[in-house]
Length: 120
Image 1 (cartoon, rainbow, N blue to C red):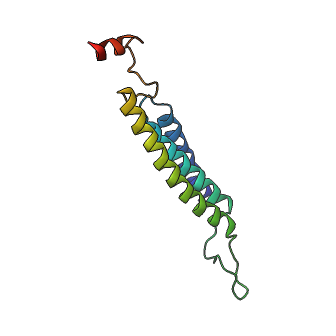
Image 2: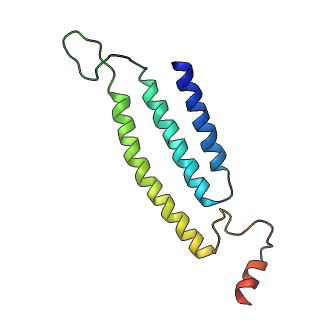
C-alpha cells in the first residue's frame, strides 16, 4: 500500500512540476494546484496509513494522530484562496499584455514587434 501511495504521489508531483514549467499561464496554475495537492497528500501520509483506526480516542482502541488531518484541512483552505488569487493575477496579466504567455509576449516575436503591431 505504501509503495502505491508513494508512486502516485511521485506521479502527481512530476505532472505538477511539468505543468509549472510550461509557457502559458493556465498550465502554470494547474501545475501549482497539482503540486499543492501532492503536498497535502504527503502531509496526510506522514501521519501513517492506518486501517480500522479512529481519529478520536475511545475505549482502548488504536487512535490515529489527528494533527496531519488538521494541517491538510487548513492547507486546502489556504490553497483554494491562493489559487483564486493566482487566477486573478493571470487574468490581469493576460489582459494587460495581450497574451497569456508567462513572459508577456509570444515566443518567436521580437521585443518591439508586438508594440509596432498594436500601433499600426
